[in-house]
Length: 307
Image (tube, rainbow, N blue to C red; front, side, top):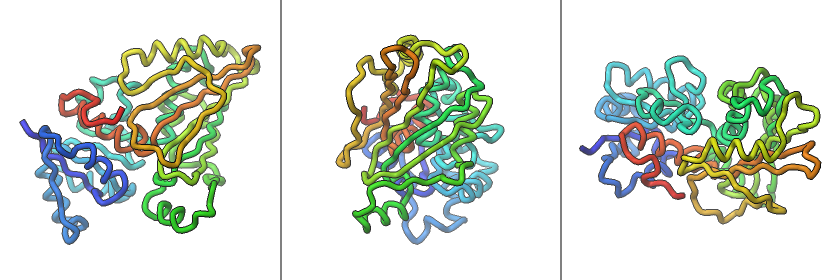
């Protein structure tokens, strides 16, 4: 049976990439509003009530409005905004962390943030296993392609090719921090240092670990083995066994929906660097939304994904 899907905010970067991943798939029929109707509340409400699934690719306030519009319908919602990631009654849409069945059976799913996807994938399994302390003040250093900032950021970087690097979030308290803390199981909010680079897509998230100073922290090889075991059954998340001399993000990278994790350790075992590499528009946004949609629709979680 074909399921009807409405992408609210389909003209944005995330919405367009979700539509690309659903194109040509007979399992889904897209409800499409033309340019004259896509911002009209009545048209959006009708589409939400006609859909089996809705994916919200909106700013936080607009996402909350869409959820209110959907009241009284049977539509199941995936929200790609920040609005509901720590909200009561919402399932966090990271199936590898919360469980595939949990996502599959949910009516309201909050898509993870791009940076949090890398951080949580690295840290949550290790804290759960007792190999890293929950009460450590973790630091997250990360860079992303400029597409993560939406149309305004894309326009800025593409208009000014002299911009190579943009550090931001300098006032602390970035909106990604609460979900990082909650779903990694931490006592303290991590210190988050994000940046944007002159590439359309791609992301690298790093968590440096001074293991010798961390109470109860395991050796780098043990951390790697734990991650490899945790994600052994995942078709999306991989843990690399190698330790290359460099990691690159390429300006011409193609869309990719996987997530690669690595553990780099000092020869004496006293320091480690946990690094996640992903596509901020893939597992960091649109790919994750399609993975969650597949599970909620009872399909293979990798259908339509680029892996």
